[in-house]
Image (cartoon, rainbow, N blue to C red):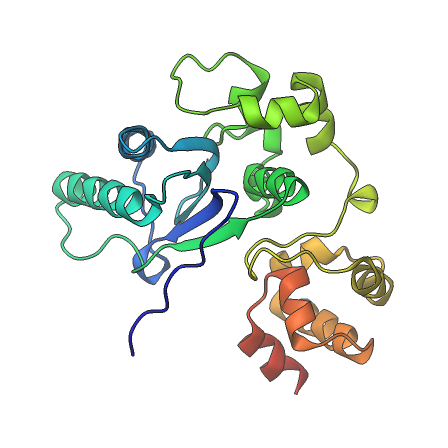
Length: 251
């Protein structure tokens, strides 16, 4: 079956996600992370693209990029290839490093742009690793301090948030006051009514905590959401849990 063409963002902004093949680790140490950032920075700048945010996890990466000229596929194909060759040479492994085609979600509004950046920066916190402001391999610190590397273009988000103080305040906003958001399902924002129904059904568990719960507890929460009247697609958008898992657990 031929691949579906990528959805094109009229805004030029995209949330890019790439994962390790078979969920394998794509970094052995910090020098590998630096190598990937160097490759991404080089291939984006060569095509007049900008990196607005990033977070490097052990087996996947998130990036927020601006691509005004439609060079997304070319740039990241080159960046991933460059990194994979260096990684395989260094480690002596053979085979693909990344899990096929990278995912890209068009970002079409200012609220979605801000929420995507925050989602990217908060990956370590949601994974239970550490607070957002202590994780060393995200662009969070580039927004609070001068970025000597010039890798991250901070102007767009800082202008929208009123500078560094506004940026920090936005990321520290309490969960209960935040607009609901999950960026992988076509970049759509679940409506407030759906989110409130989910919060009531799960209380005291938070919606964003579901993916990190033990399997038995997670499954019980999924059943509660279905009994509250949410569809499988709504639950997927709210929680980030795959629809096949939701369907199987709540059948």
